[in-house]
Structures are given as C-alpha cells and as structure tokens.
Length: 105
Image (tube, rainbow, N blue to C red; front, side, top):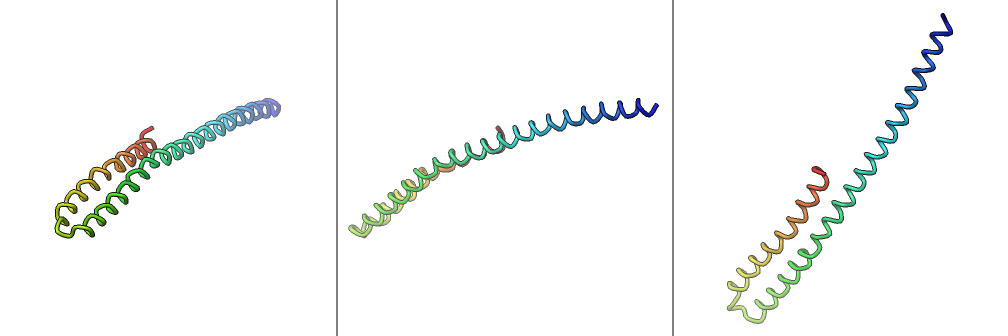
C-alpha cells in the first residue's frame, strides 16, 4: 500500500512540475507583451516632440513680431494662441494613442 501512495505522489509531483514549467512560460510571455507595450507607448509619444518644437518656434516668431511691431501685439497674440491650441491637439492625439496601447491592447 505504501508503494501505491508514493507512485501517486510522484505522478502528482511530475504533473506539478509540468504545470510549473507551463506557468513560467506564460509568465515570460506576459512579461514580453508588457515590455513591448511599454516600448510601443514610448514610441507613440515620440509624436509629442514635433508639437513641442512647433510651439517653441511659434512663440519665438510671435515674440519677434511683437518686438518689431508692438502695435500689432493683440492680433499676433490671438493668432499665436490659436496656433498653440491646434499644435497641442496633435500632442494630445499622441498621448491618447500611447494610453490605448498601454491599457487596451
């Protein structure tokens, strides 16, 4: 009777080992997927560099224009703010894509 119990225990241990190996593979697959998601989200946020540079150039041009012609400051400032808003929308789209990659896919 003792031999039957040890055989059952050895079968259970080998099944547990197979399950553990399978689980380790699944964990490694999940870690790989999470890492690739993080890389994808980071690459999606590269789209925020363009609007950042664009806003800087826009403000620079507006400040130069106001410096050259202070009487046109109100018109220049209004157009500058509109340009910043439209440019910032592109960066927000990049952020939304990055969040979708992280939390939905």
